[in-house]
Image (cartoon, helix red, strand yellow):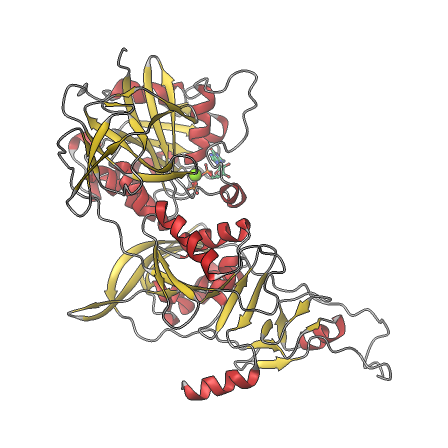
Length: 603
Ligand SMILES: Nc1nc2c(ncn2[C@@H]2O[C@H](COP(=O)(O)OP(=O)(O)OP(=O)(O)O)[C@@H](O)[C@H]2O)c(=O)[nH]1
Ligand SMILES: [Mg+2]
C-alpha cells in the first residue's frame, strides 16, 4: 500500500474567532460532502450543547484531501476552561492556523494558544478572520499580532509567518486584502506550499503518544494521538508505557483514522497520521505505545482542577418528577463513565452525606457535565462552586484569572468599583471611540457570580473574557451575595396576587401557578436578610382593593436562571436542584426550624 503524505493542522484562537466556521468551510470546499449530501451548518459543533451555545466544547478531528496530501485538521475549543486540551492537541500537529478577529485583535486566549504553539516550535499561519466586519482593522491587527509573537519570544523563522485574510463564514480567503474574494484556495495553498508534509519515518520503531481519549459503547475506551514514528497494524500486539512506569501489553482490536468527518477502519496507519486505537481499556493521557519495546515520550502533565462543586442526591420533595436517574448508584456510575474520557476531572466521595465532590478546570467545564447529565435524565442537588486552594510554604494560594473588559465609557466607574470590591487589581486601561478596555487580575473566587451583575450594570453592552492566570497568595475576604432570598414557607402553588405583593420589595424567580415547596427559594430580597414568605396566599374575598380597578395584577416577568447563573447565585447554605425539566433554587435544609438550629450550632 502506498504511503500518503500527511499534514496535521490545529485551528487555534480565542473563543468565537470563527475556528469551527473555518473548518466547516474547509470541509465543504474539499469535496468531503458528496453532491447529494446536504451540508448542515455547524458540522464541527455537532454536539447538542455546542449547537445551542454556539461554542466548541470538545475538540474534533477531521481529515481532508488536497492534491494527494492528507490534511488532518483539529478544531479546538476557544474557551479558557479547555486550555489544557488545546495544549495537548498542539503536541500532535505540524502546524497551526491562528485565527484573530479583524476588529477585536489578539485576546487573552490568543496569547495562551500562540505561546503553546511557539513553545512546541510550530510555525503558525496567521488567519485574520471576519474582514467583512464594518469595524475591521486587519492591517493594525496584523501588527498587534506580530508584536505578540515578538513578546512571546518567537524565533526569526516563526516571525516570518504567512498571513491570510478571510471571511470564514463565506468560505473566503485572500493573500492580499485587495485580491478577488473567491474561495479558500489561498489558505490551502499556504498550508501545502509553505509546510513540509510529515517525514517518512515508517521504518523506525513505533512510537505513538496518546494525547486525547474518547469512549465508544462498543469499543470501550479509545486512545487518540499521532504516530510519531513507525506504523501500526490492525490486530497487532503492542506495548503501552503507563503513567506509573509499568509496561502493559495488549492487542489493538481496532485501528481507525479520520477521513472527512468519519472515522474509518484501516489495516495499517503510517507515521505522521493521527490514529484512534481501541483495545486498551485503561489507556490514559500521555502514555506511549510501542511495538515490543517502548521509547516513551515525556509524560503529559494533567493540570490540577481549580474549582469544585458537591453533587448530592436530589432530596427535594419534588424528586423524580422529571428525571429517571436519582440514586447515589446512578450518579456514581455516571461519574465513573465521565472519568473515562474527561481529562482533568476529579471525583471524590463525600464522607458525611450522599454525594460526590466533583472538581474541574472551571465553571464551564463542570456545568457542561451537569447540563449533559440533566439531558440524560439525571436529577441532582448541587452546591455553590468553590475554588480549590493550595497550601504552600508561603501560606495559602488561590487561583487567579486575567480579565479583559470592554465597556462603553459611562459604565467604567461601576465596573472598576465592582472589581475592586472583589479584590481585582487593574493592570491596564485605555479608551477609544467611546469604549474603554479594562484589564484586571482577580481571584477566581472574586469573579464567581459577577457575570450576571456585569451584564445588568452594563445593559448588556459590555464584554468580559477571562483566562486562568495561575495560583497566587490568598487575596482575603471577598464579599458574598448582598441580598437575602425569599423562601417558601410551605408546599403550595404560587398565586399572582401573592407574587405581586412580594415583588414590591423583591425580584421574583417564579411565575404564578407554579408548585413550590418548603425551603425553596422563590425570589431575591431587596435587603440583606432572608425572608420566609407565602407565595400561595390568595386575596381575601372581603379585601377592599387598595388601588386601581383591575382584577388582573400586572406581574413583572420573573428572573429565570441558566444553570451557570443559578450556580453563581447560590450561597453556601443553598443548593441548585437540577432536573431535566426545571432548575430550582433551594435552601439546603428545607425546614425553617431545623435550619435555625443548624445555623446556631455551626456559628
Ligand atoms: N462577520 C463574520 N462572522 C463570522 C465569520 N466567521 C465566523 N463568524 C461568526 O462568528 C461566530 C463564532 O464562530 P465559531 O466558528 O463558532 O467560532 P469558534 O472560534 O469556533 O468559537 P469557539 O469554538 O467557541 O471557541 C459565529 O456566529 C459565526 O457565524 C466571518 O468571517 N465574518
Ligand atoms: Mg468552535
